[in-house]
Each structure stands twice: as structure tokens, then as C-alpha cells.
Image (tube, rainbow, N blue to C red; front, side):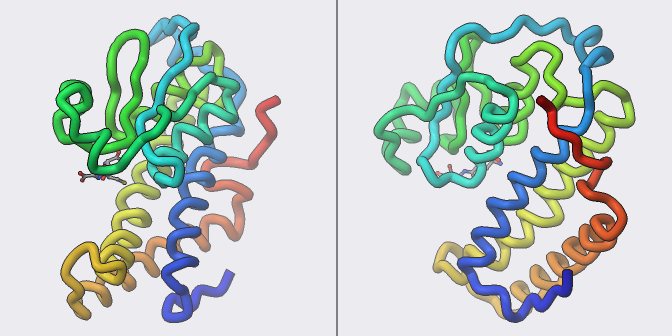
Length: 206
Ligand SMILES: N[C@@H](CCC(=O)N[C@@H](CS)C(=O)NCC(=O)O)C(=O)O
């Protein structure tokens, strides 16, 4: 994959962002059992459907929706969500005091932060191969989740949002974000040259 950052349009950027989260969770798929995790945290499968508060196109909500799809976990989006309205009601703020989405409603109470929600959803299924089964699996899973969030998503956001008018546009700041993103994608490119998926060779979980 040859990278020409200058040629990437904002549409492509948005797509890249979404794909990265997809990829982020695909990489969880290669391992077979979660024995160590299960012994550390004996988890009861969640019987009731989980409800996710977010708009239908929220990239951060895709993380847990994809994890749920791969895991066969029942997760439904709340109906009639309206950004800036639904997430500012007193009921919502009681569940997430910062008033941001996604937010997950579980039988045991709410969970916010998209990565935490994706982990919760994946772990809500007993023996889920998505969550890894050894210490090094967990290290790799956390490594790529953090990498996607901090090295890729954060730099895309610094580039994308000012261009969309959400934030002050400063050319040197944009240049720095592009350079950092290019570095991260370069590292990912190097890794993918000899690995099918970032942590290990992908095998279908079913
Ligand atoms: N770190 C949070 C970021 C959440 C976030 O920034 N959500 C945005 C939408 S993508 C939001 O709810 N914004 C509304 C607001 O700032 O009031 C996560 O990963 O869940």
C-alpha cells in the first residue's frame, strides 16, 4: 500500500476512520478461548438486549455494533436518537454526566466510552473468541485498540474536524496531524506487510 496523504479526500478520511474501527475489532477474531479472562472475571452472559444510545452513523457506535455482530450478542440502537437533544436530557446525563454518545444501557447499569462499551459487549458472551485467551492476546488486543484510538483516530480528527468547520483551522496544526497520521499508517503498513491482521493471522471465529 503506497500512501499519498495529500490525495486523501475528507470522504476517504471518514471511510478510513470507520474501516479502522472495523479492522480494530476484526483483529480480535483470531483466538479461540477466553480461559484466563473467564477465570479472572467470571461473567454471566447478558440475557436482556443491550441498548446503545447513538445516531445511526456514529463511527464510535460502530465499534460495539460490529463487536456484537461478530459475537452474536443482541445489541440494538435506541429509537429516534437526536444528537444534541437526546444526549442532553436529565435522564441521559444521569447515565453519562459528560452528555456524549455512545452510551450503553445494560441490565446492571450504564457504560460510556466507546472502547469500554465494545469490550463490555464482547465479554458479555461467554467463551467469546473475540476477546483473546492468553496474556499476550490481551496485550495485542489492547495495543491495537489504543493504537487505533490514539495514533489514528485522534490524528484523523485533528485533520478532519477543522476542515468540516468544527474547530479552528490552523495550517501548521493540520500539517502536524497529517505527519503524525502518515507515521502511524506507515507503521501499520509495515506491520501488514508480514501479518494478515495486526496481532496474528486471521482465522474465522465460527
Ligand atoms: N471518547 C468518547 C468520545 C465520544 C464523543 O466525542 N462523542 C461525540 C459524538 S462522536 C458526542 O457525543 N458529542 C456530543 C457533545 O460533545 O456534546 C468515546 O469514544 O465514546
